[in-house]
Structures are given as C-alpha cells and as structure tokens.
Amino acid sequence: MKNPFTKIIWSSFVLFAVIVALFGSLLIYYKPERSVIIGAMVFVGMMALLFISFVFALRKEMLNTLSSLSGLIQELINGQMTQMFPVQEDTLLSKLQHQVIQLSELLSSQKQRYREESQEVKTLISDISHQLKTPLANLGMYNSLLMDEELPAEKRSEFTRHMGSQIEKLSWLMENLIKLSRLESGIIELHAEKLNLENTVLSAIKQAFPAAEQKNIEILLEADQEIALQHDPKWMGEAIYNIIDNALKYTLGPGSIRITLQRYDLFARIDVADGGIGIPSAEINDIFKRFYRGAGSNGTEGVGIGLYLARKIVTEQGGYIKVKSELSKGSVFSIFLPIR
Image (cartoon, helix red, strand yellow):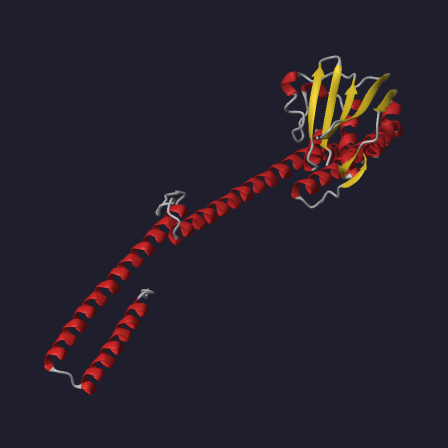
C-alpha cells in the first residue's frame, strides 16, 4: 500500500528545490563576490540538512501516530479498551481516541441489544408454541372422536361443546398473544391524553362485569376526587381490566372486589383489593413473568399473560405495580401512575 505521506514529502522536496533554484538564479544574476557565494552555498546546505531532518522527523512522528491509532482500533476490535494517548491532555489525538472508543462502545451496545432482542424473539416463539400445543391437540382429539359415525348423539353434542370451548380458548389466547407481540416489538405506540382516570377504570369494570355477575361478585369503586392525568385510556383500561380479571379468577363468590382511586402530589394510585386465595410470598416476584402460573392456579382458567401485559402497559406509561398479599385473605394490586 502506498504511504499517504510520500506525496507530501516529495512535494516538500520539490518546493525546496525550486526555492534553491530561485536563490541560485539570483546569485548568478547579481554576480556577488566569491566569498558571498561560498557563504550562501554553505547556508543553503545547512538549511537543506535541517529541512531534510525536519521532514523525516515529521514523517516518523506521523507514522508512529498512525501506528498507535491502528493499535487502538485493533485492541477495540479485540474487546480491549487501552488508552494510547493521555486523556488529560486536550489534544486532537486524545479527542480522536475518545470518539473512537465511544463509537466502539455504541457498536458493542447495539450488538448486545440485538442479541437480547433475538433471544427474546426465540423465547417468545417457544412460549407461543407451547401455549398453542394443548388447545390444538384437544381440537384434534375431539375432531377424531366426532369422525366416528357410530358415536351416540349425546356424546357428539358433548364433544361439540368441548370443541367450541377449546376454539374460544384458542381465539382468546391468539388475541392476547397478538397484543403481547405487538407491545414487545414496539409496533403499538401509546397515545397519552390528559383524561379523567376514573372513566378509564369504569371502562375496565364494565368489561369485567359479566364475569363478576356470573360468579356473584360485586365490584365496588371508591374515588373521592377527579384525577386527570396523561395516559392512554385504551391500553391503561386493558391493564386495569387484566388485574380485575385476575382478582375475579381467584375470588370465590359471593364476594366483592374493592377498587380505590387516590391522588397524591406526584402520582395517582389505583388499588384493586380482593378476598381471594392470596399469593405465597415466594411467588410475588414471579407472578408478572410471561406465562407464569402459580401453584394455586390449578383448575383456574388462564395462561399467565394478563398480569405480564398489565405491568408492561403500566411501565410503558411511566408507572409501576406493587402487590401485597396474605394467604386465604386476599391480595391488593396497587398501580402507581405519575401526574404530569
């Protein structure tokens, strides 16, 4: 590879030669005494030596600098962060070094984020496949049974009902998985508006009312004052509904679920309190994991998506969820949202 400084060096030599030639032309034109000519030639020779020394010293310094930069980049490629130039000095080289290291850290961060996202996609696909496996297997089994022409009408009707139930479960599961994947992939953008939080809670209660009525569970709402804050009513309503729905699943009827709205200086609080079976303290940190099903969930419908979605939606809007629970007495899910 051609040295980038070769052209500069040769250009400098040519320039120096031109200057010497002009100087010689002046001497010939003015015809000074011999002693003056000798002195001038000695002076030119000394200047030539100094110039050549300076050029080669400059070349060596530049090559050393480029070699250090090349070494810095190679070490960054190898995953090391060696400082080649003093960071205390405010020089162009130290600034360049800092920028190269920043670029390396940025690329490394992007690479790590890509790996994490790829792993999340793999995990999500695996989880979805696992969740779809059971209802699809059940549908296949009932379909095979219904293919029997000698199957009694009573059994045929029973299996048809079971198939309908599995189809409803599969439809519900797919709907929630689509919500989950859209939220995690960032396809959905939350549109926050300054609205009355009580109206959002009421829409969630309305959605949960049929299930509550079926189990003879009363949903009570307490809101002492209007709370207007920035939030996406659709998705926040979804999060609140998921928490209410979870309370309904684990509360035996007749019973009640109490929802309380409170306003503080910096945040609003929504409490959803139930009188259900409670959550073991060892599981409190796990209940918001995707597809997590606690030990007490046997026999209860669900696949472990609702609370995961609720926390993700609340977190996306700058809030968080806390849980207090006591076995056989119930749980309180508290949503905290910032007031902006």
